[in-house]
Amino acid sequence: MKIVNIVPGFGGTFYCGNCLRDSGYTKSLIKLGHDAMMLPIYLPLTMEHGIEKDTNPIFYGAVNIYLKQNFKIFRNMPGWMERFFNSSSILRYAAKKAGSTRTEGLEEMTISMLMGKDGNQNDELQELIDFLKNHEKPDIVHLSNALLIGLAKQIREQLNVPVVCSLQDEDVWVDAMNDHYRNKVWDLMSEKAKNVDAFISVSDYYAHEMKKKMRIPDEKMHIVPIGIDSSLYSYSKPANNPPVIGFISRMYEEHGFGLLIDAYIILKKNSKYKDVLLKLSGGYTADDKKYVKSQIKKLKKAGIFDDVEFIDDYKPEKRFNFFNKITLLSVPVLKGEAFGVYQLESMACGVPLVQPALGAFPEIIENTSGGITYSPNNAETLVNSWISILSKPELIEEMSNKGHHAVINNYAIDPVSERVLNIYKKLIL
Image (tube, rainbow, N blue to C red):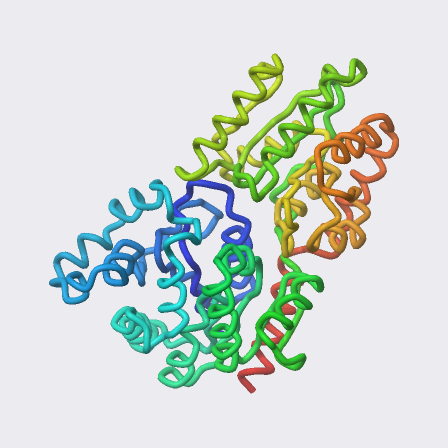
């Protein structure tokens, strides 16, 4: 089967769970004997995940579509100028600048992309379709997220193939908009959902949320969790001499980075836990730099900055090493998430989770017994939850074993990919 996954590049400036999902899935499809590829849009795919270096062009180059959306003078720019703005060096530079991952200022762009051929990116849409038609000839096209469903109608009509769309954390982008744009975007996404043959949510929680927000009928909704290749991860008993708390995700407010810092400062005031260390990884964007500096300032003021390690490299080998040096993992996302692939990575390495009882976190922990949840999501409750685990070494070991085996048995990438392939087959027949 020829499968094309259309995925947004992110420039490599922070730990991207959706990117890990897409790349791991594509690699698994290739292993299972299918002709699968990732086709990047907006920005390059820069994180290495074991897939051969991509030589395909980048469609919907972020710089070009931004200029065309906001300045009419650029809508008829010569080809050489488009190629310049679409070069890898320019796009990688753009990825490092502020604003590429925040909603503010990109509301009209979001709407235009959802409008498909009726938006300001019709030329880019047709260029992508011509490439698929003349070079790839896919049996199925899989969109990485629902913010891309403006592509679906033209792909279906011109290529005569089914279109599948993954669902994971689109609400984070849309719900950050003001009421005017938020309502308009959800209405538009609900309308464009009619052009998608099947949606695949990564959790029961998120399937329920998106069926309401996008008015998706039951027969189009499928639930397939994220999978990982557990053979890549080295299992070891959680570190305990000294204990180490870990965080790996984009370091910004919405992912609870500041909440975690506040909790650590409180924990270190308890003489029983003054030796506990903190390891932080996942990176941040230019937008987040000021915020991260403010958290560092708090650590220095509390006199515990020397007990904190920032790990800038989160590529596979360094990331696996990170997990093997921590006792437990907390990523206290303020409003929860649709899944959180770092949870699987953590448990695969034998590290228990301490997560807020929000989003899909309770669902994942209930299915694995690899950690605990807490509520409400504030620093004091998080500290108490850490203490409830750190004070019981036998509980840490029990959750370590259960979580590790649950990932191997229930979230192995190849069986997960087979479940997605079964959805494809039903659409193609």
